[in-house]
Image 1 (tube, rainbow, N blue to C red):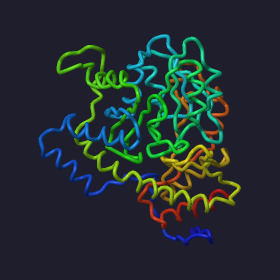
Image 2 (cartoon, one colour; image 1 turned 180 degrees about the vertical axis):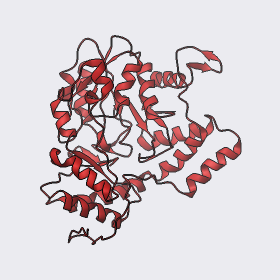
Image 3 (cartoon, helix red, strand yellow; image 1 turned 180 degrees about the horizontal axis):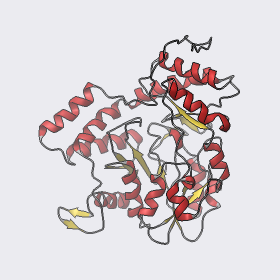
Image 4 (cartoon, one colour; image 1 turned 90 degrees about the vertical axis):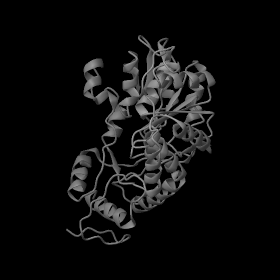
Length: 378
């Protein structure tokens, strides 16, 4: 079938278009090889170099490297002393680890609705859920778009609660021209392969708090103060030298990755601007740079799964975003949640499709995605 849109190049041959692709080249390969050749591959000087580069990149005082983004969140809860009987407020529309780390500490995740336009949690919805048991707030920069930090930090300060910003998806973004990584008391990042910077697997915590930084460094390495001297409960959450070497090179290309994605976003926005069946991402004024972890469109919920299936048949990879926490089997069984427990969140999620936005995506690939979506959404 020949699919086309007169504003874009006509594509007649089927293509395979991935949702994302890592921006990795020879320089990264050489950096990793040099580390392996050196003989020192566990956490060492390269990890320290990566931490220093990262904190400068996001204007943070401290950066603590760990083995993945989930570990980053868990280290924070452990450092804050979150435990049994405590409540942690977080959005339901997020990846599972945002909630599972509370369970690791035998605390209770308290789920908040999202704003159906931004898909982010709001200060108003957080404040409704605060009780005497609330000990922390974990808002999430969904799809790479910053939350309204001023609003949420004001609520947190009013109730004397720590904020752990789950910024796994928003490296490179800015809020009111301030870099994500230095705004909340704590930020957590992920370096999974589909992120703007990847180390294969990896994570980072940034904080302005000297005492918390010291605790986190101990926790990531079995609670050690020095070799074999353990002063607190910890885990083996250390990053390897190979991961750090990859991350150092990746970090240098962050701005290039963002610019490549911004070009893709502009073309998508132009293509779908007058399409009443496809809603493009809403970006509020306080977001001065979006990280574009994903480009998320909203369609008729009755048509979404059919559109996704047809795109798959045409070789176009998509995702349905993260199913809300309250709709996950584990949490339904443990807490008695059901799909309509948070109706705004579930309705918003049921319309979402993440479409391809890899930094190496070509115009021809993007035209193919656009043409197919335009045809299928009619």
